[in-house]
Image (cartoon, rainbow, N blue to C red):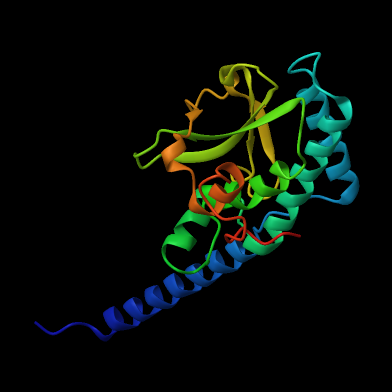
Length: 211
């Protein structure tokens, strides 16, 4: 059977249209990178985070809450400049998993942020590594902050990955989509072990870059 020349012209047109649409989609994606906010916006966000940290317990030091909040907001913004995340976090995972981005998975955000918070040497607040739905395709990692001696379940989740450079936080009990549990000690990331297990790992072990 002989095909009409119009058929080939039509297929060529459709192919060009698909290519154009793909190019447009790529261009849109490249302009969707999350902006971490202006300094004034970040300052206001840090003020709100500090307030929420202080509400964990009357024993929480206001100055410690301020330092933790400012550090968490600013270091997340700096990580955003490094990772160049898009608005949708799962899109970022896809880019990393296909080699189009070097880093930017949830545990990498956590591992790079945690040392900056740990080195604040907090006395009235505690940091906990946490995971949700571990060993499933929905596995997620973050940090939970509690008042000193407060139950893990009453803590505040800090999640730099979820909004791609705009730090997300909320009470664990209100974060319904993520059944957060403490990360088992034996699963402590190697890069964080010199901080959390100094008796077992040499102090000169490699950390995420300090800013």
